[in-house]
Amino acid sequence: MIEACTDSRLLGPLRIEGLVNGGAGIARDAGRVIFIPGTAPGDLVQCRLVKEKKRYAEGKLVEILEASDRRRKPPCPVAEQCGGCQWQHLPYAEQLIWKERLFHETLIRQCAVDPRLLLPIVPAANEWHYRSRVQIKCHLTTNGFMTGFFKTKSHVVVPVESCPVIDTKLNECLAALRTLLAPTAFAGEIPQIDLAVGDEGSARAVVHYLGVDRGALADLLRQLTDDSLDVLIKTGRKNPLYPVRGHGELRIEVDQPPIKLTYAAGGFAQINLQQNRQLVDSVIKTADLRGKERILDLYCGMGNFSLPLARRAAWVCGVENSAPSIDMARRNAELNLLGHVEFHSRPAEGALSFFSRQDPFDVVLLDPPRAGAHAVMQELLRNPVPRVIYVSCDPQTLARDLKPLLQGGYRLVSSQPFDLFPQTYHVESLTFLEYRAA
Image: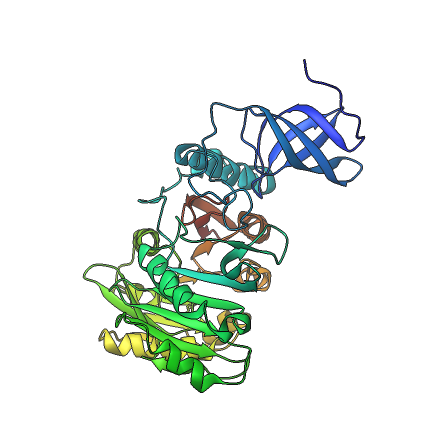
């Protein structure tokens, strides 16, 4: 028998019924919903309330009174403190079940989507060491130079010697940088190190520096022995990167035969390169091009989707608000000898109206940030396009954006989640819509 809690903010025992968007477990107490991170379906737990509303509350896990058989011991020793992973305590098969279920439920509940149009999740080939980009937080303490990640909902650095989700090459780079910097005065002036690796094995480190002796730091960093690691120094948000060794450009590959895409420090590439190739292949298959189509690619970045589609279409117009990314997209098109494509640096909002003045588009592809593309949805209603392919990294904003389209003449053909982020609750997706005239 469990002893009654004397603290009014302690609750338990509570049985975890399932998981919710955001990764927390859900339990119920006297008709009120309680969200408790770090729990697994079937757990019997005690929690401490940290936020209370009329109809729900948020709790912090205090004790697992009875562990679910759908729980595992997290492989990472700091998984419960680090804010990088939320689901290491779930076996990967269980993670996939809940990602698929929550994604499907979101579209069914919020958009009244026919469940038969929702496809199974595409799992990652590797649940570990998949991450090709990472921001390492740094902090000098009385115990030495700490490198790791912020604790959940804080700016406290949780020390991490080797992270099981980042590429093994990046773990090696991190260890070399930590060993080099730790005994120096620079250790207290470096708040962050950005690491990235490409498909060809080359890596990049951007060292954020708050001090004034950049030259001395550069001399120190040149002592790194890994010739495949480019090193740059960042001294301020608006200051250009200072190259110590190399220029920090990395290459990834998509499509077959491979298209090589170069991106610079500060540019965007998906963090899971293997899954990105799966996503690109699915976009190509979904587009089902015949060689005569005109395509508008919004939020095109350095050409991740634009260039594979340009191989198969009459013309592709890529739009991205970041001028450096557009410069790189143009360069990638030239290096891969791809015509029938042009790139423009401008906001996605208004691009459809502007570029379709002379000839309409057959396909609009968009891959917006987590905030979604609400304004673009309104434009798609004013300027209907036969086919829309929406790549999303957030099911909630995807559902919000789809709703007006589904009420305004568009038909959902299919929607499929992709797991680009094992050990977390995050999910990518690919949704295909067609416009049917009234």
